[in-house]
Length: 373
Image (cartoon, rainbow, N blue to C red):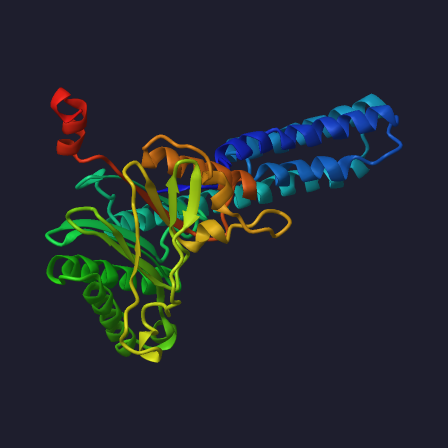
């Protein structure tokens, strides 16, 4: 899991120069106008500017520097008078206030950092890393956090090798926080159980639907209105066909031979938790998955990412070129393009993973041997 936003540490390093710039600006303005412009308001602002970007020591040092700068300007222009006591006393008072603000901000930052660490640990516990391989599939996954302060979202993915083939899940639960964590945990547990015991994909989807509806029945408030868009897919043991049940989720992309084709459902279906409104029928579509092709599954944090003009990101043009049979390379291309499109951030959390079908070892050996030619 990582954050897609621009590095905040680098931004803070740049802001560290702002208090010094204020002091230099006040000095230059005063000397260039020969004291005709009162620059004490600028000097008074310097400690306040320093409080959120510098340490406590740096904030106090800025206040001291502002006082010394003001005193130097007074001595250059004229003899100090009793009237100068008020502005200098104000500078000292503002320095003390800035120091207090700096202590409060530092304490809040530490508490926020602790909260982020706890949230990240919960996210990792609920959504562990995917295996690098599942049967003949090479696997890669990413989880991108939209906001540093909200590391717990409702996006989830899973892949499992079972006696019935390799089964995959990607979903996006409505909401965030503990409500989303509970639903994510329930769906993941139900998926792993159903994948091992249900012989067909329809049964897996139906068990997920039943689990979602049970969670809704035992909830109240916003949780009682929860649902989850999802794509549930499987490859049978012979890898002959890719079966997909799409429950109101963005369509996966099949990347192969320089093309990216959306695997759209022939019949739209409601999200998990709303199936009671449409009956018990589970629609499953079948697609060919050639050797070397990559299937990319993602949540709406990707295709609903907007640029400054409000234009949504389209991953199809980005993936409509030749890629090596490497799911990591495909995901890095998507993420690099989406961050370039948005200017470095996401409006919503995004989960995405990709699987690449590799050649069967026995078949590859036959092709390579003289007997197989």
